[in-house]
Image 1 (cartoon, rainbow, N blue to C red):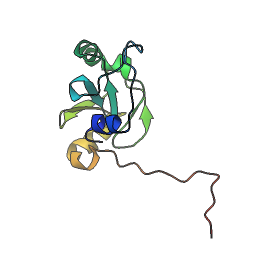
Image 2: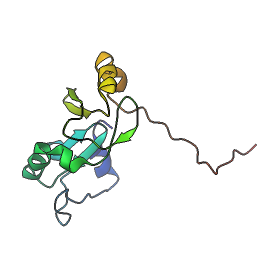
Image 3: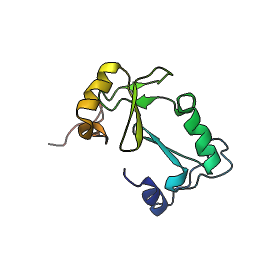
Image 4: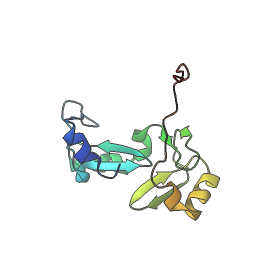
Length: 122
C-alpha cells in the first residue's frame, strides 16, 4: 500500500506505539519505517530512529520479495535499498534476482488463496 496512513486514518484505526504501547503511533510518513512489505509506525521520530538503527533486532519475520517465503533476518542477511525502501532477502540468489528486475518485485503481488475447507457452490 502506497500511503497506509491515509487508509488507516480513513477506517479509524489507532495503532499502539512500537516501543511503548500506551503511547499511540502517529500515522504519518515521518513516523513510519518500511522493511520489505512490512510497515512499522512509531509515536515519535526518536522511536523511529531507535528502530532504524537496529532494524534486525526489532523487525521480526519478513517476507522475501522474490521467493515470498517468510524468514527471520539476521545481521548478515543480503540487503539492498530500492525506491527508498530497505529490502532484506533470505538468500544471495533472491537478492540477485531482485536486483535484475526490481520493478517486478518491489510491491507485493500476493493473492488470497481459498481456504482448504471451502467448497465452490456449483
